[in-house]
Amino acid sequence: MRMLRAFSLLLALALLACCLTAGAEGFSYQHDPMANPSAAKDIIVDPSAVYGYSPNPESTRLGAYAAYDWTDPEAVAAYREAREAYHASLDSMLETLREMRSEGSSIEEMARSVSAERNRLRLASYENDPDGLAKARKSNLETYGSEDGPTPESLHKKYGSWETVLQKSFSPNPGMDACTGLYDEYYSLYVELGLIPDEQPEEADDTETADAEDTDDADPGDADADPEETADDTADDETAAEED
Image (cartoon, rainbow, N blue to C red; front, side):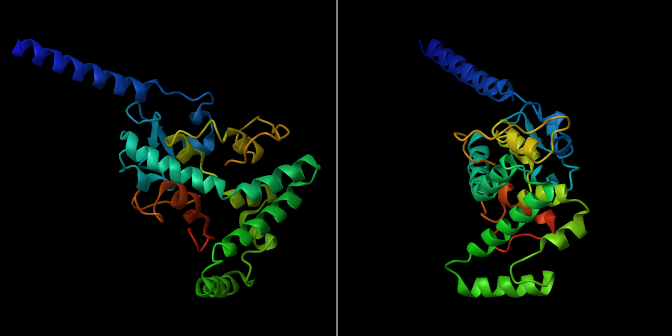
């Protein structure tokens, strides 16, 4: 009887392990992240990862995150939650982009408005920190010649095109989204920003929730080191003082 019970327990554990493995390997996206050049250069196909992808160790943007355990559902769930919070912080920028696009605004006009909104959001994060706000304004003035942050003109000079200025304003990282199970959810944003070859943006659906790097690095449990924050801003050279 004891042997039978032991055998039953082992069988149950084996079945559970199989289910967990199938859950990780069985996940798939409607849109293939590897078909997106901006994502493919930063990630690798990883069947053992919760969402089928993990950071490429050779990536300059996400390489620091390759050492994290992307096979751990609990850890990845935390990364995903923080990533969603990052996207949510960009809602007003996305609303501005979609409104201007629907009005037929040019890429330059949209880039100017969205970059200005990002500057506003960065300073607004210091609402309850007057000392931090003063330091941020001082840093902006010394770095960009404006207390508000980088001007559209300086960004255009740095990146060479208004389309790139627009993309950098959002600093989207489709690779990190793929690793955290959010690639399909924000696919329309990549299209809107011109990151998907041969795809044209569709008119935004009013019922759609606004969703939505260059750097990386740190501890998943650290608010300043979560993939969603560090991987989204550091390499941009204009990291927001509050989280970049």
